[in-house]
Length: 362
Image 1 (tube, helix red, strand yellow):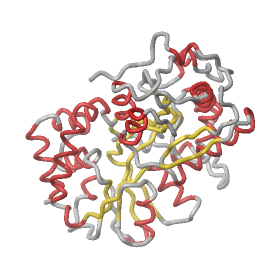
Image 2: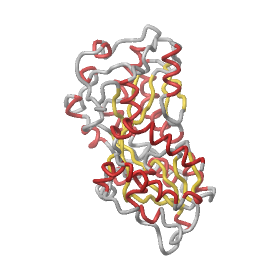
Image 3: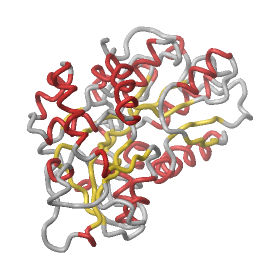
Image 4: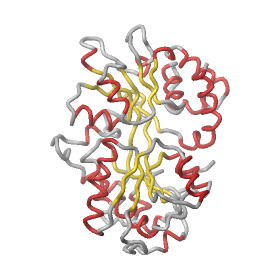
Protein backbone atom coordinates (compact mmCIF):
# COMPACT_ATOMS: atom_id res chain seq x y z
CA UNK A 1 0.00 0.00 0.00
CA UNK A 2 1.30 3.44 -0.92
CA UNK A 3 0.88 6.31 1.53
CA UNK A 4 -0.25 9.27 -0.60
CA UNK A 5 0.67 12.89 -0.25
CA UNK A 6 -2.12 15.45 -0.33
CA UNK A 7 -2.85 16.43 -3.89
CA UNK A 8 -5.62 17.45 -6.22
CA UNK A 9 -8.86 19.28 -5.68
CA UNK A 10 -11.14 17.90 -2.99
CA UNK A 11 -14.38 18.92 -1.41
CA UNK A 12 -12.46 20.08 1.66
CA UNK A 13 -10.10 22.10 -0.49
CA UNK A 14 -12.97 24.03 -1.99
CA UNK A 15 -14.16 25.12 1.42
CA UNK A 16 -13.05 28.64 2.31
CA UNK A 17 -10.48 28.97 5.09
CA UNK A 18 -12.70 31.28 7.08
CA UNK A 19 -15.97 29.50 6.41
CA UNK A 20 -18.27 29.12 9.39
CA UNK A 21 -20.13 25.96 10.22
CA UNK A 22 -23.76 25.53 9.35
CA UNK A 23 -24.04 24.37 12.91
CA UNK A 24 -22.00 27.24 14.35
CA UNK A 25 -23.59 26.99 17.78
CA UNK A 26 -22.62 23.35 18.20
CA UNK A 27 -19.55 22.15 19.99
CA UNK A 28 -16.91 20.47 17.87
CA UNK A 29 -15.81 17.07 19.18
CA UNK A 30 -12.07 16.44 18.90
CA UNK A 31 -10.84 12.98 19.88
CA UNK A 32 -7.32 12.34 21.11
CA UNK A 33 -5.19 10.28 23.50
CA UNK A 34 -5.82 12.00 26.83
CA UNK A 35 -3.47 13.07 29.60
CA UNK A 36 -0.66 15.54 29.06
CA UNK A 37 -0.99 15.23 25.28
CA UNK A 38 -4.63 16.30 25.19
CA UNK A 39 -3.81 19.08 27.65
CA UNK A 40 -1.22 20.39 25.20
CA UNK A 41 -3.86 20.42 22.46
CA UNK A 42 -6.37 22.16 24.72
CA UNK A 43 -3.87 24.90 25.55
CA UNK A 44 -2.39 25.34 22.07
CA UNK A 45 -5.40 24.64 19.86
CA UNK A 46 -8.76 24.43 21.61
CA UNK A 47 -8.66 27.51 23.82
CA UNK A 48 -7.24 29.87 21.15
CA UNK A 49 -9.72 28.51 18.59
CA UNK A 50 -12.69 29.09 20.90
CA UNK A 51 -11.38 32.57 21.73
CA UNK A 52 -11.13 33.45 18.03
CA UNK A 53 -14.26 31.80 16.62
CA UNK A 54 -16.52 31.21 19.62
CA UNK A 55 -16.99 27.50 18.96
CA UNK A 56 -16.64 25.27 21.99
CA UNK A 57 -14.39 22.22 21.68
CA UNK A 58 -15.49 18.98 23.32
CA UNK A 59 -12.51 16.70 24.04
CA UNK A 60 -12.89 12.93 24.11
CA UNK A 61 -10.22 10.28 24.70
CA UNK A 62 -9.61 6.95 22.98
CA UNK A 63 -6.84 4.35 22.69
CA UNK A 64 -6.39 4.50 18.93
CA UNK A 65 -7.58 2.27 16.13
CA UNK A 66 -10.40 2.60 13.62
CA UNK A 67 -13.16 0.46 15.17
CA UNK A 68 -15.25 3.26 16.68
CA UNK A 69 -14.74 5.53 13.68
CA UNK A 70 -15.80 2.76 11.30
CA UNK A 71 -18.89 2.03 13.40
CA UNK A 72 -19.97 5.67 13.31
CA UNK A 73 -19.45 6.04 9.56
CA UNK A 74 -21.15 2.78 8.68
CA UNK A 75 -24.12 3.61 10.91
CA UNK A 76 -24.33 7.15 9.58
CA UNK A 77 -24.35 8.45 13.16
CA UNK A 78 -21.33 10.71 13.45
CA UNK A 79 -20.61 11.95 16.97
CA UNK A 80 -16.88 12.63 16.50
CA UNK A 81 -15.64 15.35 14.17
CA UNK A 82 -11.85 15.48 14.27
CA UNK A 83 -9.65 12.63 15.46
CA UNK A 84 -5.93 12.42 16.27
CA UNK A 85 -4.44 9.38 14.53
CA UNK A 86 -1.30 7.36 14.09
CA UNK A 87 0.03 7.32 10.52
CA UNK A 88 -0.98 3.77 9.62
CA UNK A 89 -4.57 4.33 10.82
CA UNK A 90 -4.80 7.61 8.93
CA UNK A 91 -3.70 5.92 5.70
CA UNK A 92 -5.90 2.87 6.10
CA UNK A 93 -8.92 4.91 7.18
CA UNK A 94 -8.53 7.12 4.13
CA UNK A 95 -8.39 4.07 1.84
CA UNK A 96 -11.52 2.70 3.52
CA UNK A 97 -13.47 5.94 3.07
CA UNK A 98 -13.66 6.82 6.76
CA UNK A 99 -12.19 10.33 6.44
CA UNK A 100 -12.73 13.45 4.38
CA UNK A 101 -9.99 14.42 1.95
CA UNK A 102 -8.02 17.56 2.77
CA UNK A 103 -6.07 19.44 0.11
CA UNK A 104 -2.73 21.03 0.90
CA UNK A 105 -3.99 24.20 -0.74
CA UNK A 106 -6.68 24.59 1.92
CA UNK A 107 -4.08 24.90 4.69
CA UNK A 108 -2.50 28.22 5.68
CA UNK A 109 0.99 29.12 4.52
CA UNK A 110 3.80 29.02 7.04
CA UNK A 111 4.48 32.07 9.18
CA UNK A 112 7.44 32.68 6.85
CA UNK A 113 5.21 32.51 3.78
CA UNK A 114 6.18 28.96 2.82
CA UNK A 115 3.56 26.94 0.98
CA UNK A 116 2.21 24.01 3.04
CA UNK A 117 3.63 21.38 0.64
CA UNK A 118 7.10 22.82 1.26
CA UNK A 119 6.66 23.73 4.91
CA UNK A 120 5.46 20.41 6.33
CA UNK A 121 8.20 17.83 6.79
CA UNK A 122 8.05 14.83 4.40
CA UNK A 123 5.35 12.36 5.34
CA UNK A 124 3.30 14.79 7.43
CA UNK A 125 0.73 15.47 4.71
CA UNK A 126 -1.58 12.69 3.64
CA UNK A 127 -4.59 12.63 1.38
CA UNK A 128 -7.01 12.67 4.32
CA UNK A 129 -4.88 13.90 7.23
CA UNK A 130 -2.54 16.66 8.35
CA UNK A 131 0.39 15.98 10.66
CA UNK A 132 0.65 17.92 13.92
CA UNK A 133 3.52 16.39 15.90
CA UNK A 134 6.67 14.32 15.65
CA UNK A 135 6.71 11.90 18.59
CA UNK A 136 8.54 8.78 19.55
CA UNK A 137 8.22 5.62 21.56
CA UNK A 138 11.15 5.36 23.93
CA UNK A 139 11.75 3.44 27.09
CA UNK A 140 12.22 5.05 30.46
CA UNK A 141 13.29 3.95 33.91
CA UNK A 142 12.98 5.14 37.48
CA UNK A 143 16.42 6.58 38.26
CA UNK A 144 15.84 5.94 41.97
CA UNK A 145 16.14 2.22 41.23
CA UNK A 146 19.58 2.51 39.60
CA UNK A 147 22.32 4.18 41.64
CA UNK A 148 25.35 2.96 39.66
CA UNK A 149 24.81 0.78 36.61
CA UNK A 150 22.06 2.26 34.44
CA UNK A 151 20.33 0.98 31.30
CA UNK A 152 21.56 2.71 28.12
CA UNK A 153 20.62 0.55 25.14
CA UNK A 154 17.62 -1.32 23.77
CA UNK A 155 19.49 -4.54 24.61
CA UNK A 156 19.45 -3.51 28.27
CA UNK A 157 15.65 -3.37 28.17
CA UNK A 158 15.61 -7.06 27.24
CA UNK A 159 18.34 -8.05 29.72
CA UNK A 160 16.51 -9.06 32.90
CA UNK A 161 19.64 -10.64 34.39
CA UNK A 162 21.70 -7.47 34.20
CA UNK A 163 18.69 -5.28 35.05
CA UNK A 164 16.12 -7.39 36.94
CA UNK A 165 12.54 -6.26 37.36
CA UNK A 166 9.26 -5.95 35.51
CA UNK A 167 8.98 -4.22 32.14
CA UNK A 168 6.03 -2.29 30.77
CA UNK A 169 5.16 -2.70 27.08
CA UNK A 170 2.23 -1.56 24.97
CA UNK A 171 -0.18 -4.38 24.23
CA UNK A 172 0.38 -4.33 20.47
CA UNK A 173 3.06 -5.84 18.21
CA UNK A 174 4.16 -2.50 16.77
CA UNK A 175 7.43 -1.24 18.31
CA UNK A 176 7.78 -4.42 20.38
CA UNK A 177 8.72 -6.48 17.33
CA UNK A 178 11.11 -3.84 15.97
CA UNK A 179 12.80 -3.48 19.36
CA UNK A 180 13.05 -7.25 19.78
CA UNK A 181 14.92 -7.54 16.48
CA UNK A 182 17.24 -4.62 17.24
CA UNK A 183 17.95 -6.00 20.72
CA UNK A 184 18.83 -9.25 18.95
CA UNK A 185 21.38 -7.48 16.77
CA UNK A 186 19.46 -6.31 13.69
CA UNK A 187 20.55 -2.89 12.43
CA UNK A 188 17.84 -0.25 12.55
CA UNK A 189 18.23 0.34 8.81
CA UNK A 190 17.34 -3.31 8.12
CA UNK A 191 14.67 -3.93 10.71
CA UNK A 192 11.65 -3.75 8.39
CA UNK A 193 13.35 -5.81 5.70
CA UNK A 194 13.93 -8.53 8.30
CA UNK A 195 10.49 -8.16 9.87
CA UNK A 196 8.87 -8.64 6.46
CA UNK A 197 10.09 -12.24 6.40
CA UNK A 198 8.67 -15.25 8.22
CA UNK A 199 12.13 -15.97 9.68
CA UNK A 200 12.41 -12.38 10.91
CA UNK A 201 9.01 -12.51 12.58
CA UNK A 202 9.91 -15.80 14.23
CA UNK A 203 13.14 -14.23 15.46
CA UNK A 204 11.31 -11.24 16.94
CA UNK A 205 8.78 -13.37 18.81
CA UNK A 206 11.57 -15.63 20.08
CA UNK A 207 13.30 -12.57 21.55
CA UNK A 208 10.03 -11.41 23.13
CA UNK A 209 9.72 -14.87 24.68
CA UNK A 210 12.81 -14.09 26.77
CA UNK A 211 11.03 -11.34 28.73
CA UNK A 212 7.37 -12.32 28.36
CA UNK A 213 7.05 -13.47 31.98
CA UNK A 214 8.42 -10.12 33.18
CA UNK A 215 6.11 -7.88 31.13
CA UNK A 216 3.12 -5.89 32.34
CA UNK A 217 1.07 -4.72 29.36
CA UNK A 218 -0.31 -1.22 28.98
CA UNK A 219 -2.91 0.18 26.57
CA UNK A 220 -3.41 3.86 27.38
CA UNK A 221 -0.61 6.43 27.16
CA UNK A 222 -1.14 7.59 30.74
CA UNK A 223 -0.32 4.15 32.15
CA UNK A 224 3.50 3.88 31.72
CA UNK A 225 4.48 6.85 33.91
CA UNK A 226 1.96 5.71 36.52
CA UNK A 227 3.37 2.17 36.42
CA UNK A 228 6.85 3.58 37.01
CA UNK A 229 5.66 5.86 39.79
CA UNK A 230 3.82 3.01 41.53
CA UNK A 231 6.83 0.72 41.30
CA UNK A 232 4.96 -1.87 39.24
CA UNK A 233 7.78 -1.82 36.68
CA UNK A 234 11.40 -0.72 36.74
CA UNK A 235 11.37 0.35 33.09
CA UNK A 236 8.71 0.73 30.43
CA UNK A 237 8.10 1.71 26.87
CA UNK A 238 6.24 5.00 26.69
CA UNK A 239 5.50 8.01 24.55
CA UNK A 240 8.34 10.45 25.10
CA UNK A 241 6.04 13.35 25.96
CA UNK A 242 4.37 11.43 28.78
CA UNK A 243 7.69 10.77 30.48
CA UNK A 244 8.79 14.37 29.93
CA UNK A 245 5.60 15.60 31.56
CA UNK A 246 6.03 13.30 34.56
CA UNK A 247 9.67 14.33 35.02
CA UNK A 248 9.29 18.07 34.46
CA UNK A 249 5.85 18.97 35.76
CA UNK A 250 5.37 16.17 38.32
CA UNK A 251 9.05 16.07 39.42
CA UNK A 252 9.42 12.33 38.97
CA UNK A 253 13.00 11.03 38.78
CA UNK A 254 12.49 9.33 35.44
CA UNK A 255 15.14 9.01 32.73
CA UNK A 256 14.54 8.47 29.01
CA UNK A 257 16.69 6.08 27.00
CA UNK A 258 16.67 7.37 23.42
CA UNK A 259 18.53 4.41 21.93
CA UNK A 260 16.50 2.97 19.01
CA UNK A 261 13.58 5.30 19.59
CA UNK A 262 10.84 4.70 17.00
CA UNK A 263 9.55 8.04 15.82
CA UNK A 264 6.44 8.85 13.88
CA UNK A 265 3.77 11.50 13.36
CA UNK A 266 0.31 12.06 14.72
CA UNK A 267 -2.18 13.57 12.35
CA UNK A 268 -5.59 15.18 12.40
CA UNK A 269 -8.33 13.74 10.20
CA UNK A 270 -11.99 14.67 9.77
CA UNK A 271 -14.62 11.94 10.09
CA UNK A 272 -16.44 11.25 6.83
CA UNK A 273 -20.01 12.51 6.93
CA UNK A 274 -19.74 14.86 9.91
CA UNK A 275 -22.47 17.50 9.71
CA UNK A 276 -19.90 19.96 11.05
CA UNK A 277 -17.51 19.59 8.11
CA UNK A 278 -16.82 23.29 7.56
CA UNK A 279 -16.16 23.91 11.23
CA UNK A 280 -13.98 20.81 11.47
CA UNK A 281 -11.88 21.90 8.50
CA UNK A 282 -11.47 25.38 9.92
CA UNK A 283 -10.30 23.85 13.21
CA UNK A 284 -7.72 21.69 11.41
CA UNK A 285 -6.51 24.67 9.40
CA UNK A 286 -6.16 26.77 12.54
CA UNK A 287 -4.49 24.06 14.62
CA UNK A 288 -1.88 23.18 12.00
CA UNK A 289 -0.70 26.75 11.45
CA UNK A 290 2.91 27.52 12.36
CA UNK A 291 2.11 29.40 15.54
CA UNK A 292 -0.24 26.79 17.02
CA UNK A 293 2.15 23.91 16.34
CA UNK A 294 5.00 25.80 18.01
CA UNK A 295 2.76 26.68 20.93
CA UNK A 296 1.93 23.00 21.51
CA UNK A 297 5.66 22.32 21.86
CA UNK A 298 5.62 24.67 24.88
CA UNK A 299 3.38 22.20 26.71
CA UNK A 300 4.83 18.81 25.75
CA UNK A 301 8.05 17.56 24.16
CA UNK A 302 6.69 16.63 20.75
CA UNK A 303 8.16 18.39 17.73
CA UNK A 304 6.01 20.39 15.28
CA UNK A 305 5.55 19.04 11.75
CA UNK A 306 6.12 22.45 10.11
CA UNK A 307 9.64 23.67 9.46
CA UNK A 308 8.48 27.26 10.00
CA UNK A 309 7.44 26.36 13.57
CA UNK A 310 10.93 25.34 14.70
CA UNK A 311 12.26 28.86 15.28
CA UNK A 312 9.12 29.69 17.25
CA UNK A 313 9.74 27.00 19.88
CA UNK A 314 10.81 28.57 23.15
CA UNK A 315 10.48 27.43 26.75
CA UNK A 316 8.04 25.23 28.60
CA UNK A 317 4.87 27.14 29.42
CA UNK A 318 5.10 26.59 33.18
CA UNK A 319 8.52 25.10 33.99
CA UNK A 320 10.45 27.65 31.93
CA UNK A 321 13.04 25.18 30.61
CA UNK A 322 14.21 25.21 26.99
CA UNK A 323 12.20 22.69 25.02
CA UNK A 324 14.42 21.90 22.02
CA UNK A 325 16.80 19.53 23.90
CA UNK A 326 13.80 17.40 24.88
CA UNK A 327 12.45 16.93 21.36
CA UNK A 328 12.79 13.48 19.75
CA UNK A 329 14.58 15.13 16.83
CA UNK A 330 17.21 16.91 18.96
CA UNK A 331 20.63 15.78 17.63
CA UNK A 332 21.71 14.04 20.85
CA UNK A 333 18.44 12.10 20.98
CA UNK A 334 18.21 11.19 17.32
CA UNK A 335 21.47 9.30 16.74
CA UNK A 336 19.94 5.80 16.51
CA UNK A 337 16.34 6.80 15.79
CA UNK A 338 14.26 4.62 13.46
CA UNK A 339 11.29 5.93 11.50
CA UNK A 340 8.23 3.78 12.13
CA UNK A 341 7.30 2.26 8.77
CA UNK A 342 3.59 3.08 8.52
CA UNK A 343 3.30 1.42 5.11
CA UNK A 344 4.65 -1.84 6.56
CA UNK A 345 2.15 -1.76 9.41
CA UNK A 346 -0.74 -0.79 7.17
CA UNK A 347 0.02 -3.81 4.97
CA UNK A 348 0.95 -6.31 7.71
CA UNK A 349 -0.80 -5.05 10.81
CA UNK A 350 -3.79 -7.41 10.74
CA UNK A 351 -1.66 -10.52 10.36
CA UNK A 352 0.87 -9.50 13.00
CA UNK A 353 -1.82 -8.37 15.44
CA UNK A 354 -3.47 -11.77 15.10
CA UNK A 355 -0.19 -13.56 15.72
CA UNK A 356 0.67 -11.25 18.63
CA UNK A 357 -2.70 -11.86 20.33
CA UNK A 358 -2.29 -15.62 19.89
CA UNK A 359 1.22 -15.33 21.38
CA UNK A 360 -0.15 -13.42 24.37
CA UNK A 361 -2.75 -16.11 24.97
CA UNK A 362 -0.18 -18.93 25.17
